[in-house]
Image (cartoon, rainbow, N blue to C red):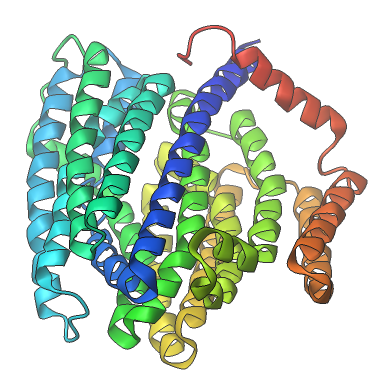
Length: 480
């Protein structure tokens, strides 16, 4: 009975968060379309390089602090005020330090693709935006994903309005970077207002900066490595190629980045549940969530890989058609990311964050090496291949640790059946290309669905149960 209640709760909070994220990603997509059509390929490359250079440090202001807040609040919601206060102070210090670090890095890099002033604006947006993270982490720890979704929705609507006004009145790289800073300020105000009713009411145990950072470092180091790993390709493209190549790669990465955020959002709701349950063996909750990811991830890859060309033309215009191959490759890396997203959450929730940090560090080193070798030869396509290789490595490494430690990897039958269905469908996608992108994609997705049902990886009962849980979860409170 407990498991059933837990599953309904998890389905509810996941559904609430994902519904909000779908709206948010739609707004981000509108923003990306406005940017691309206002700036064009080369200016978009300039904008993408400035924001990408700042994003190298994107998770440094976090340093694992938000994860600690979520865990502390999940364990004792009402007696963590002192911890939360100290975490906010640490967040402010880290945000200021990151601003300085980004500007210094832009100054010492050998090739200056954009003015330092533009990089400073991108860094300022990152620093200011990070001040809202503790409040969002607090809502996550209380499983109040309805309030978290509300905060993100209000910020998203405001941000899109600011971007649209900037495009109409100014339309320059600098003006869009300034608009991002204003949006970050709005996000801070909204997050504080939404989270205020859920602040801890009692101080709880005292917490020093030293204790906070000692606890955060294992999470934070992994997050920093992950941040560097995700953005180093954009910076290396800016150093080794032209602004136009960066612009094409940035356009290809926009839909992929939304997919990555969507997958990590869905997996992230697992964290408070896995923290609270037994850590000594397999997890039924994790197994059910991972199975959904295993079935859905290849569909996402087939869709975005097959429809890469028409999608780019529809969103950004014919001048971005050259980015189609990059998007096709990155779509498969996004599928691998979806598969290891719940794996990374499980490792961190069960105290294995050092293992995940080690795997991410190895992937970062491989990614830098591959990008350095592939970008001068194949440009953006080379960077996409490097990303795909590293995402595959993280998936294999994470699954190996889970299986070895808790026997939590997917069943052999499920893994082999999904691999066979994916390979056959990808082959059909390639074979049907001469008949058009839409026809090839429809054929490949249809074949994948038929094979997953044939191999009984997914059944009509599974779909009915999942939909039933979401229907049940629409009633009752948002708390887990």
